[in-house]
Amino acid sequence: MKIRLIQKNDFYGVYELWQKAKLKLDTYQNEKREFAEMLNINSESCFVAVNKDHLIGSVFGTNNGRRAFIYHVAVHPDWQRKGVGKKLLQKVEFSLKKIGVSRVRLMVDLENLHVVTFYEKCGYSTYEPYSVFMRKDL
Image (cartoon, rainbow, N blue to C red; front, side):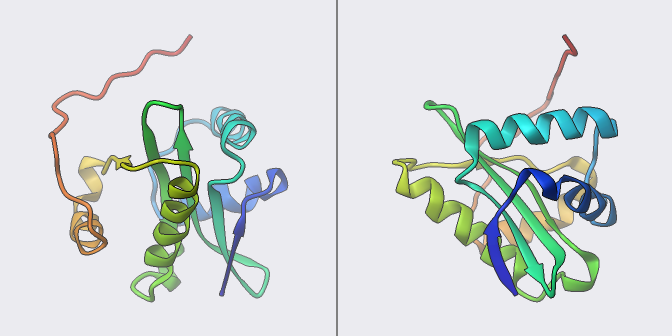
């Protein structure tokens, strides 16, 4: 397994991976647009795990100068519980730390609470429960 920076032409494979990993997704077009925007801003902190040319994991690290977040941590079901997610987290954390980030946040979907234990084992802790997470399309 190899971890490398995500490239723009990885979108289709990454989107398929997200579907297989059962991430909550927006429409295909919105995800594609946001993927490109994310890479334009944070190209050095977005990674995929690859095994024999197959995408088996992804992670996005973002930093807006005020806060850093980790998004779209996904591991193909056949590769879960084999250390891929942990290695992806370590890679994105290292890349964010290199640019001066000292704290990172991530959110866990209410339908995916079983991964909280994984994040806790990786050193994350609940710091403030979100009661409402809102959005607006513009």
